[in-house]
Each structure stands twice: as structure tokens, then as C-alpha cells.
Length: 313
Image (cartoon, rainbow, N blue to C red; front, side, top):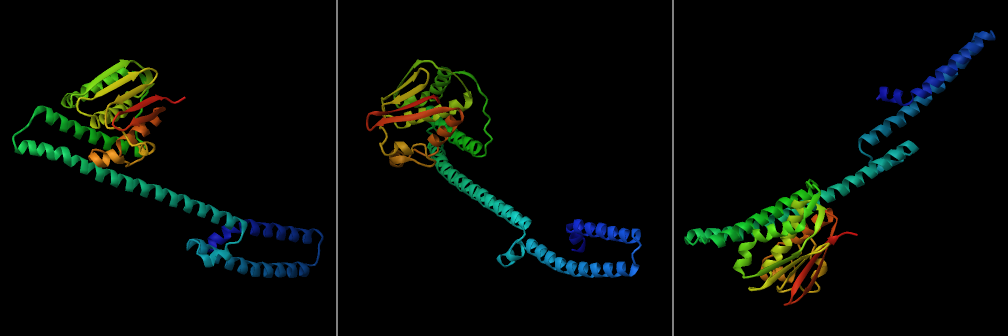
């Protein structure tokens, strides 16, 4: 404690020594009586000792208050401008830490909700595959359909983790969007055949973007176009300085459209048909934002839905 005190007030004591030395030099130069010098030094030392005791007492209390991390009763002891500046800094750090903890807590809760939803969704195709195996009814088309669902759910979870942890690996290159769409249609060909849904692709769109993440975003939209389409329906994909994916499905309630891209929102269709996780379109929106692309939805009940993606102007 004494060493800390000396370091705190070393400038003050150094100034005293310089002044005392100056006075001694003056006394010798002018050959003044040494008795006056002794009395002057004695008086100044007495005052210095009394001042040191007072300063040390205050310094000790201030150090204890800071070490105890500033309780309310200790605040009057910390009234110097430097102390107040430190208190403000500490308070700002505490506030920043509180906000960061809230963000981490919110992220942890979102992750738990996502994993819970994901595990629930994974049970459906796993149960279907288990039933096929037990009944020895392993139809290749049905097996492929369930495996595709598992693959999509796994991709959703992994991409959600990447985006929330800011570890997404975007690599921009010139991409022919038609090629991406054709590959996705091939990926979902069994679902198109199973529901007898026809698909028409028209035009092309050359875009500098990340092919993998664009494919993920488009896969979510095509998956929904299949999932909520009617048997014997149609899917039309038009590419011209943007992409428009239209289906002849059950449509979306007008009041649900503004919230389609909210995290965890399933809407009336998702609740009614038990097919939605509430994360597919949320992830699609986040990915498209990163790719500097805008998405919009138009829909009419029992007529169909059109999803449009364009470059942000």
C-alpha cells in the first residue's frame, strides 16, 4: 500500500525536495543564519508529515473502495475528476458486458429452439424409414424422398450455425443461375414425379454471387413450391435480371406474408399441414441479404405463390 501511495504522489514529493533543496542553496549563498534554515525545514517537514497522513488515509480508503468494486457507500470517497472518469469507464464496460451477455443469451435460446425444432423434424423421415424397414417395404422413390428431407434438415441446421456464428464462407464468382436451378430441379426430380408436378424454366441470369449459398436459398424456395403445391400442379421459373419462382399451390394468407421471413414463424400453412420449421425462409432471407439480393413474395389463396429475387439497387 505504501509503495502504491509513493508512486501515486511521487511528483508531489519530488517537487517538495526540489523546493527544499532550493531554499537550502539560497540560505548558503546568502549566508543566512542556519537557525532560520533549521526552523524552516522543521516546520515544512511537520506540515508535510501531517499532509502525508491525511493523503495516505484518503488514498487507502479510495483504493479499498476500488478493490471492492465501487459500492454505493464508497462513492463519496471517489470524487476526484480522475476517479469519476474511471467510474464512468467502469459503468460503460459493465453496460457493454450486460448487452453482450443478453446477445449471447438470446443466441443460446434461439439455438436451443432451433435444435429442438430440428430434432422434432428429423424424427418424421427417420420414423418413415424405420417403418419401411420393419414392413420390408423399401420403395426406392420413397426412400430417396425421406433421405432428401433428412439432407435438407441437416443443411438447415449447419447453415443456421454458420450464419449465427458469423463463420459463413462466401466466395463470389460469376454464376449462371439457370445452371443452379437445373441442378436443383434434378435434385428434387423424385418429388416432382411423385406429385406429378410439371416444371418450366425460361431464360437465364448471369450474376456475380456465391454459387453454394445461392443454391441453398433457391432450394428452400423450390422445396416450399413442391411442399405446398397441389398434385398435378405446376412450377414456373423465369430468369431475366432476376429470378421468379411461381407455383399453383395452396397460397399464403395475406396477413402471414409480412412475417414469412421472421425466425421461427410458420404461418397458417405450416401449422395446418405440419410441414414447416419456421427457419427455411428465415435463413433464405439472411443468406440473400449477405449476397446483396432482395426477395419478395406475392400470393393468393388457392391460386398460388410467386417468389421473386432481384439485385439490390
